[in-house]
Length: 160
Image (cartoon, rainbow, N blue to C red; front, side, top):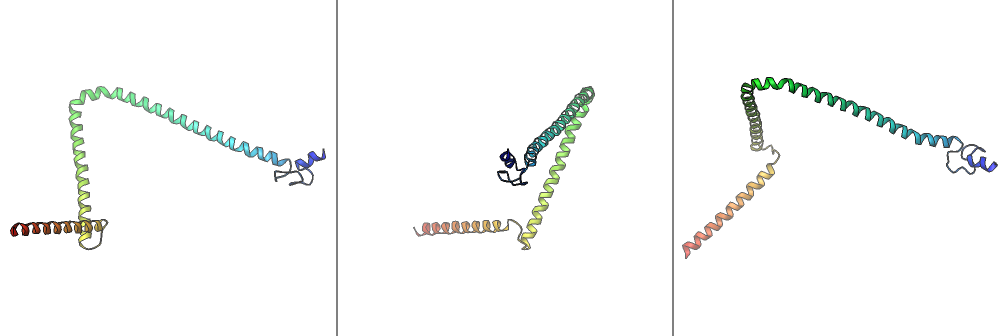
C-alpha cells in the first residue's frame, strides 16, 4: 500500500520517489486529462461556429437566388416589350464604353512612353535603358558586319 502511495506521489509531495511524470501528485493526472479535453472542446466549438456560419451563408444565398428568379420573372415581360429599343441602346452603350476605355488606356500608354523617352533623352537612365543600349550596339555591329561583307563582295566582283 505504501508503494502505491509512493508511485502516486503522495509521500513527499511532487516529484516523490516512483513519480515518473515529473509533475507529481494526483493533480497531474487531472491536469493532463484537462489538457486533452480542452483541445477537443475547442475543436468542437470551432466546428459549431463554422457550421453556423456556413448554414447562414447557405440560407442567404438561397434567398438571393429566389429573389433573382422572382426579379427575372417580373422583368422579362418588360424587357420583351422594350427590346426593340433596349437592345440597340445596350449595344451602343457597350461600344461607347469600350471606346472610352480603349482611348483612356492608349492615352495612358502614350503618356508613359513619352515620359520614358524624356527620361532616356535627358540621361536619367529609366528602367530598360541598358537593354535598349545593348540592342542598339548589337544592331550597329550587325549593320557594320553586313556593310563590310557587301563591300568585300563588291571588291571581289570588280576585281574579277
